[in-house]
Image (cartoon, rainbow, N blue to C red):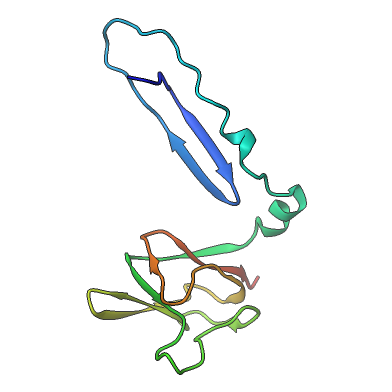
Length: 134
């Protein structure tokens, strides 16, 4: 193996990546230090992280294509700043020619639309940031 990593964790812009490599028992190779990746990534401002700590991330429940509106010429289901209620449709994720409506699990205000309309999304990818109603 080229790198003898035991663990590497990097967090930037609300995304965390963790890599762990366990080596099988055997002769030990000289330790190779990995470059300091975290130092090269932009770090969020402390007040920004604190300001967004209470926000709820609405994630893609499946792999597919993200659509903000029911039709290309229709207005989006929700926009930034809209207050939504539990069960309200937020978007559509098309998977295998099936249109899956994604609903709000709780009431709140849409703070940010994270995904791009018409673009592929992965399972667990953030779609919206929502400020929950208390």
